[in-house]
Length: 267
View 1: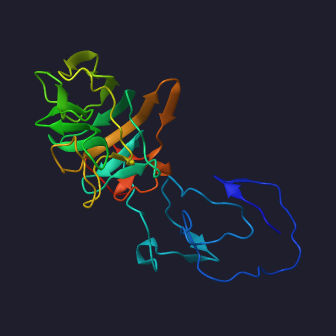
View 2: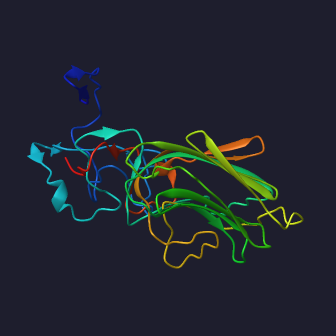
């Protein structure tokens, strides 16, 4: 017989054939290895974006800190809010096949940080074409290179953008011009090379940082972002890509869908 109880409320009881389960191998919690083939539970494509504790199995409490192995599993936060936490030593990567910025693209996201410097987003190519968003000395910087040279728009707030409060930014590239809006205040920049209008990028989208062996042509720093992000969207024409951090093809030291509302980083 099989049943599930959630917060004391039991499901209907289902009778099964036989008295034992013919299983072998390891017990996995929260997800499955990429090399694992699930034969009877369907195609598992995502891990659990949540916290687990007090796991009991056949009356025995599982000591999660003593697992045989773990992958991209971190600590939970005492008090959490919406957003994904970047520890300051990792990144999230999207579009493994590569993303072409082209002539027009917009990026919007919310971020919260107390670190004055850090990578927000970078999309580059093997040549010089690229776009980049970063924090430099407490201000947001938007860089674009269509192939003829870098142009930059920089926020001009009298206050630091890295005061621990949520900030909303929208970065737009339209052919040879760009604009950056942070909390409703917009700055613009024009490319002196007006005939250069398209950034032909072919690399993945990196958020919060990027691997050591990857080159980013429109980022001035390699400093990984430390803080939280949410509501990341990339707009191109009538197509909107909402980038879910739990669905990134790589996200080392990034904790999707869990952002601490203070400095505490464990339960």
